[in-house]
Length: 111
Image (tube, rainbow, N blue to C red):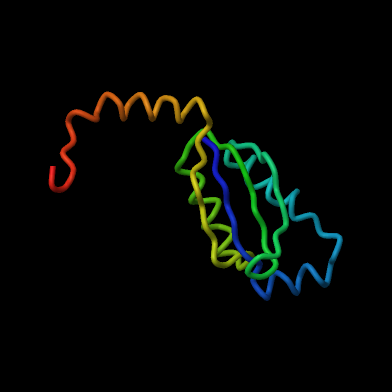
């Protein structure tokens, strides 16, 4: 399952990065994600809302995605973290088929 994690670096993390500007945060992310049985798809630095990061990764167990996210917060690396489940087009096709099957059993408000 694919996830997108975004967040801003904490002041503590930014200071550590400035002290060692060649630090490889992508390798650190890859190591964590692979330890969870997943794969790093891509990682980008972002400037919106402060220096931050956007990471797209794939994990077989959706329960490890919040663990990965939580570790980045508790380690003091990121703040304002947002974790979003991403759906492939094949997965969305299945969602639409399921919705079509369930449609007749749902009554909307005022219906």
